Amino acid sequence: MTEATVKRPRLLPPHYFALAVISMWVLHRLIPGPRLIRNHWNWFGLVPIILGGVLSAYSADLFDRVETGVIPFSDATTLVVRGPFRFSRNPMYLGMLIALVGISVLMATSSQWVVLPLFFGILDRLFVAREEVFLTERFGEPYGEYQRRVRRWL
Picture 1 (cartoon, one colour):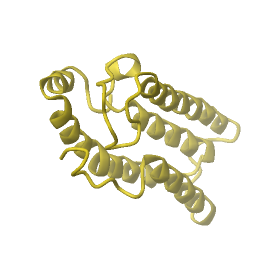
Picture 2 (picture 1 turned 180 degrees about the vertical axis):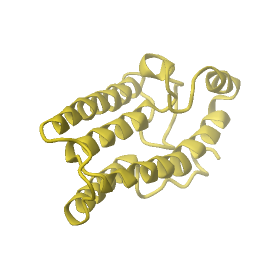
Picture 3 (picture 1 turned 135 degrees about the horizontal axis):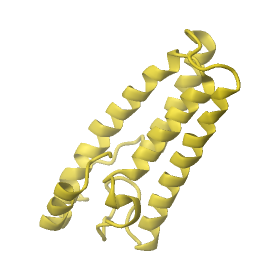
Picture 4 (picture 1 turned 120 degrees about the horizontal axis):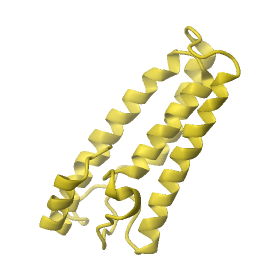
């Protein structure tokens, strides 16, 4: 599964993130379900939105600094293991998921929460699992050691 043999998906994680946000908004507007969070407390959803955005952006910036591909299955020239990559092998995806949690808290109703496990499952199956094979082929034992030391998500 080298870069030349990997068929890059048309939709990338940021596209799935945008689709998740749109889906959450549609569910919230059309079938909101019970209100889970009282008025004014829902604004605490801004905290995970900001933290998730910072985590994703900082992690992507680390890739740019070492000039390795940030787009899934693009040219991976360096194994990044510093910063948030010391705690999670997928901090960009984790940041997106944290931001979606914040959006759900901000909306404060129950229906949009079903989107989170779907988003997680899509990223885990379409990207994370395939990227692990790709990175194992690319970096070999150093990546294997990194996998043993650092959790996939948290």
